[in-house]
Image 1 (cartoon, helix red, strand yellow):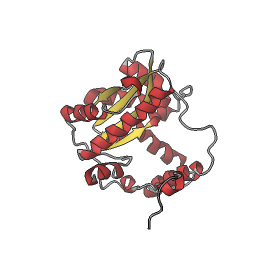
Image 2: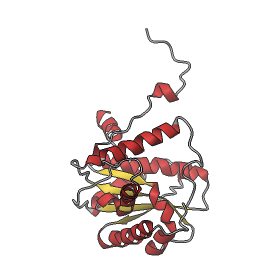
Image 3: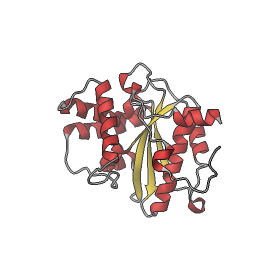
Image 4: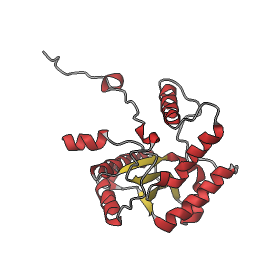
Length: 228
């Protein structure tokens, strides 16, 4: 139980990785374990493109160049965030954003530095392995819910092996570029990207530890006998 809890609670979004390679066998094993996630009628709606070396470099170069050039016309594959944030979600979003920028010494209004940091998403934060996850766009909402359980399994299984991850919705903004580089099928919708590797423990951005609301704040309990 302690090992399982540790793998879950020590998971965090790492934003700078060491160049230490991760063997294919280890990544494949992680995905095999993660695929035990439940899915409606065992449909298993997940698909993954696992990249390292030259294929990863080519994808990163293509997307990062488009992002840094500020080319218009690149919209998300699907709406991830609401059109307008409201509480308590607005405060939580701001806390993580300014917490990260504070560690990096980026002040309010330093838009170029913010852009450069955001652009590191498209380098998989220097991780040796980058993954692009897709789903058949003809599937319904239930399969997307199933997908979330699979992705969590990937990240927890990685932690159990001493690896770190960063799930990245940022990649969905450039699905047209990704589709061209990876030669995706038309029905494949990009769910997210994910960086995988060993965290650079000396990087200031990796000192970020985000808060979590306790169960008492989001769960209602009924029918339990009061503890003496």
